Length: 134
Image (cartoon, rainbow, N blue to C red):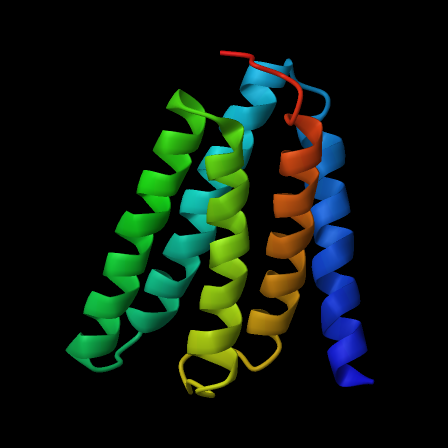
């Protein structure tokens, strides 16, 4: 039951984010999704900065750098790269933070974040599939 609530929290947050973003012009909508990907990665840096080992902090900073590259590339190139960044972030949530049961991340967060990420990845892929907007 707890996992279902976590999934619903992520899904409803994603829906709210998309509804907010859809109020913007398509180019700015995509920019908001890119910025969101960077922020999603930085949240884990914030968790790690609360006093975990330097190794974890370096790992989280490396992830933030990688997701920033996905975001930038998804704005400059095909939007599927941005969708791929969000999909990859869902794997980051689950494989690194849920399955390893990191103590510095709240237990509910990785599942909720993964639901948000994978739904947004699918939405971006569908929304911008036929557009070649720049």
